[in-house]
Image 1: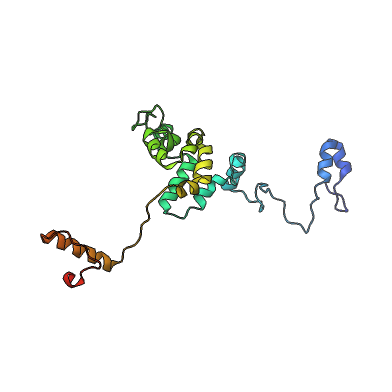
Image 2 (image 1 turned 135 degrees about the horizontal axis):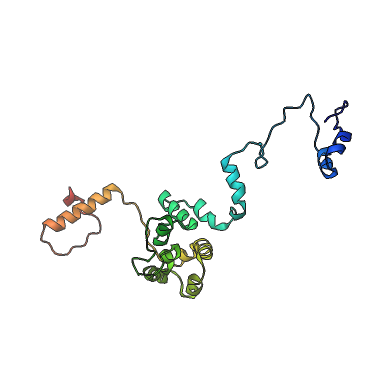
Length: 214
């Protein structure tokens, strides 16, 4: 297979191997005493090592969209972990809705229990159910409602939960929760006890009546 000078013995190949294959063989370096032993490698990784994770990645590369802005909702979320996980389930469309339970073999009907809709999917739970609509109609500006209700799941997530997220909550009044120091909370409790124990008329204090709270 290899001549004395260390190159492929092309004359031998020409007797047994078609010319198209010989061209490919020429492009492959022949064995060399100082080279490592030939071995089978996995072309799907930079190291040549095979792994199930890497093989799965190559199979599903065409269906993955890792750079979609939609995923920024989950990765950039700074709140509670359980809320971030809930957002992830929404993006993956894996909320345990009636439709998802049927798909997993955990249920027999995909009907929505709250409004009796024929199919309870992620979008119906979050947006299209009558109960959800009542809430969204209070939060979303009127001029955005048509677009808000007219998109499919992925478009709705991308255009509303991502692009309009800050706008929606900037235009909607909401609660601010502040911490109350323990001492002030105790004063409020003492005032409540006074009101409960005594039969007094309505009085207004500029400052807490500390002498009475002792």
